[in-house]
Image 1 (cartoon, helix red, strand yellow):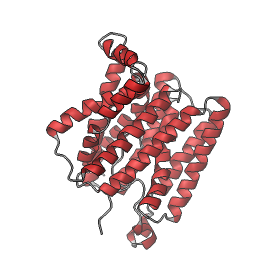
Image 2 (image 1 turned 120 degrees about the vertical axis):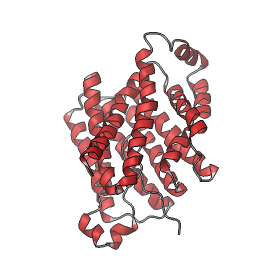
Image 3 (image 1 turned 90 degrees about the vertical axis):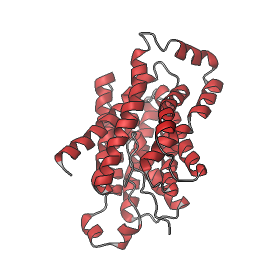
Image 4 (image 1 turned 90 degrees about the horizontal axis):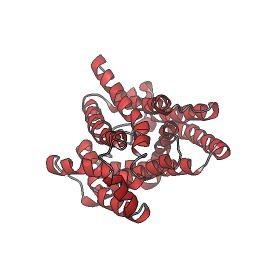
Length: 323
């Protein structure tokens, strides 16, 4: 990669890492389900008007939107609203990578390599340590909700692979049309019309300004700028060259949360978080020598970090080639 493109990849990692404390600030004014609905509504309107619909069946588009859009962000936002530190959330969401590999093995019958199995094992141990530690020092529910978000993201990753879109960016944008109506209805039922009215009625006040700006950040910077740069890099370089930069997202997330809120993970959570990220990175890395020699074990299975990375961190598998 050129120096310019390496810097662009770092810009994406920063955009997506800052996404976590930004989400926490947005949730200070908007309830979780309403925030999901607003985020995807602001993204869906220009998408429908300006972006061609991906050439895949509607059923697969709806599945991707329901999982990557609704399940992932609804549970993530619920977790942060329930007390999950935003920096720790950026680490726990890396669970999507081992979840993706396991679900792809069951759903798509993809064989898990030894390297992936070892990486998954390391990441799972790290997650178990974090969950166990949080259950002793704080509420466990926010961790469980965040893991549910990671699971929804993982199902969406496999759904993307199954859909095999010719243009992944178009699918990423078009999945935004799925979430607004169901999430608004869910917000109406769970969060109530009074809370919705209070949030929207005071949206132009000075007190709401930080949360409104953060909502715009989620739409314009995390989604449009981040995905735009990332897709361009993936169109120029091999995915194995670009995808490792996604491992910087939780690093930036932890640092940004520390700067924004003074969140400092304790030693146990920090070490376990490093184990999670390290396990994901190990599982997604194809050894150069074996890949160059065409090793069948490494060639049959795409690594979990191989094409499109979502703003919450890890790359889902590359769309499958139809046989």
